[in-house]
Image (cartoon, rainbow, N blue to C red; front, side, top):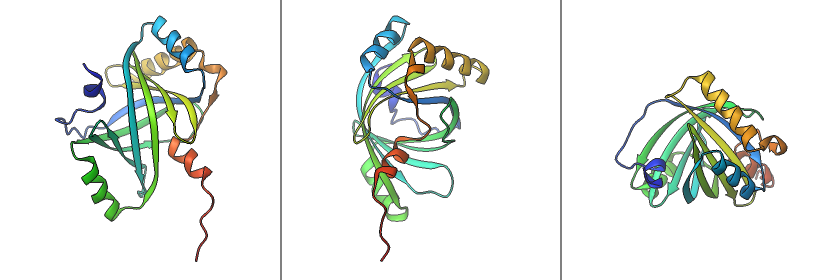
Length: 191
């Protein structure tokens, strides 16, 4: 399946609840990680530029991802812990992300926008993201998809990949990029 199909399928409007096991690492050694992943059997899905617009919501998180003229509205729940953690999410796809952003922006408060260049590799049931995030630097993110395999098998695959890619030497990150960027902002003064 081509990269755009795996990242954005504008014909699908599935709202099924999905689940990943995720980890994030601050890691500047993308070349070494990529070489180890490819040697371990990963496939290279290419590089994409993404812009994620986050909105304040009463529970969980809501972001509109812009990729190649398409969009994904992603609602998700994930704990901020520096370990492999579950993430439950729903995705709605659109061919008109700018119009959807305007509608959401008229009703919800925009929190932050995250710009990143993402190199995507796939290893079995795990997406490996080599991310260059504007204002934050380089990270490696692993997302092992639960669904075709059981939760326990997903956790095992996830842990094996952390070891294969030698990510134990990198700093584990508990927060999402939006949280890291928000912490960098100076406090707002009240009138």
